Length: 180
Image (tube, rainbow, N blue to C red; front, top):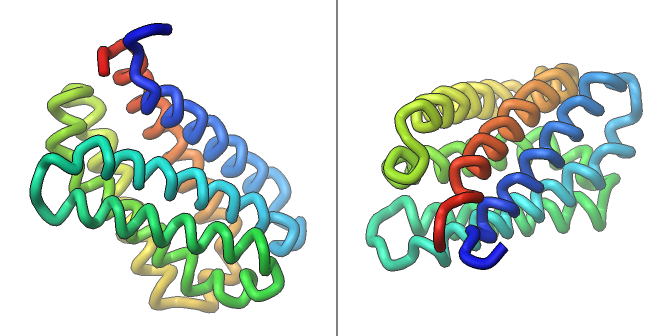
């Protein structure tokens, strides 16, 4: 495995975890939200670490996108720890925190589209662009409709987590064979 991108393997693991969480969310929407908050917390921590690692990897470039990746990573880690440690409080805060997490993660990915296009090609670039624009729209809808967030979070979250997982796996596939 010498010379292979470790970041690609991390993206692959994140993608698989997100897809599994998305499928579980859609398969059992009647399961109490509190039982899934811990899993979402762990996913947020892992995604936050990945965003921070992305920042470290591209810190030599200047611009708003790299700083936003660091901020999104820190917010994801903080959100994930809060959800995992305080699941009861997480349910109440989730109506605001979950949409903010969606928005921050999507903006972070959109700010790195140039790098994605350069390393992964146009197909993955457009797929990532579309998925993250959908995520921004969904995040804004959920942010301004807390009641909708509580009633439909299972379906929104499940579908979007699957899309994020596919996006991560596609990005991982483009990076695993590349040299660091």
